[in-house]
Each structure stands twice: as structure tokens, then as C-alpha cells.
Length: 303
Image (cartoon, one colour):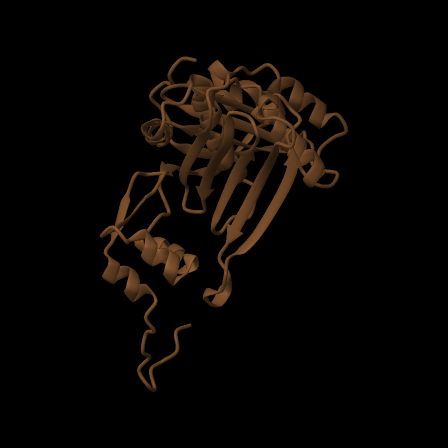
């Protein structure tokens, strides 16, 4: 697919079709997608089909934050038994995206999700912070993968989990990834034929146009008869949530014996698969993770 034109890069746009009773989101990723792709390819030389699926998944994760209440992060994950074992993409409330694909074996790979094998599933997870520093609140929906395309799989998800008619178009190339989502408004908003009209117009759009056209041009060209209203949006960028604190917490979760074993040869090294950042721990630093931390008497309790 052709590269995108130089406009409205790395942006999410929300819109409304008031006559039809339909809401929508359009996402276009440029530098953000190139950074995700470059880091994924640094981990492994993925086939073109896997890279394209990763781009579509990353655009989809960003799309879904346009409607869902996300205060932390939203992730999409596909798991299967074929050569493509895992496809993961995430978008945070701050608008940062990241993604990764894991491939095993030398079997043939294609964009057809049915190649993921029997028992393949898709999960959409929303993780929001809890008050008082408690464990994050997680909401997760799981559906079996039965569609041949990623867009079709997401449409199945919304039909089964939210009972909301939904249409998606996803596209990815070397330089850009993009997505467009339509969803019927809950309730009786819009006229009786509004959803049919909106989806008929939606079906005239191809992946090349989705990648090439800026949001304003695309939406007004496609939905001008429906009185499309642009509701604003937000910027998107590549970003990784890894940190030394999170790696330390991972070691603490392993337990002291296993964590010490990781540094038995003089150093424990953890490399983030998403961004490539490396975290090194000496044996003394591992030991310190399990030492009780004295609390000053009379100190204020953390809230």
C-alpha cells in the first residue's frame, strides 16, 4: 500500500454522524508505527504478513480508546497454536502505543487468522488505576477467533460482547498504519435506515485511501451527506511503559531464590521486548530487593 501523504500524522479523530445515529473514530499512525515496526523487526525478522497484522492491531488498539473509558491502558492480544503464537498491541490513556509479535517454528504464515489454529482466542483488556495505590482494575473480554481478518475478528468481538453493530477497516504499510471504526450509538438514536446508509458508504472505502487521506478530507468525502461532525481528537506517539521499578517488582514476584539465580553469573539482565531498553542488576541489587525497608516511626503514611 502507498505511503501516507504529509498531514495529520499520529493522530486520533473522533466524529459523529448525527442523522444516522452513528459514532466513529479514525486513527493514523506514522512515526509511532515506524518505531513499533523497527523495534519488532529488531527482535526477529518477521514475514511481511506478520508485520502488517501488527500494524493493524496497533491501529485498532488506538481506535478503541476513542470510545472506551480508558484511564490506564487498553490492549488487544491474539493467541494461537500456529506459527504466529502471539500478537499484542497497546494504547494508553496518554496516547502512547506499542506492540509486539511472537513467531515460532518455520511454518507458513499468512494474514488469514484461521491459520492461528484451533482454540485461538482474542482478548481485549482495559486496565485502569485503582484509588489508593491498589492493584489496577482490569476488564477483559475473550472471544474465539473465527474470522479470517483482524477487522472481522474485532467486529465479532463487539457483536458478541457489547451487542453493538460495529464496522472496522484496518490497513498497514511500511510507513503508516491506519484504522476507521463505525459504531451504532446505543439506544434509538438516528433514523431507521441510518446504520445501513453509513455502512454502505463505509464499504466504498479501501485501505489505500485510508492510509493516504487526511482525516478531514476522508470523513467529509465519505460522509458529507450524513452531516459528519468532527468531535476533536488527540495526538498519538510510540511509548513504552517499562521501567526499573516494574522490573524490580517482577523479580520480587519471582521470589528471592529464583531472582538470585538470575544473577548467579554476576549480573541479571532484562531486556524489554517492546523498546529494547536493558535493565541490569548486580547480585547485591537483587538481594536489596528482598531486604525489609525500615519505616521511620511517626512518619506520614503514604496515600
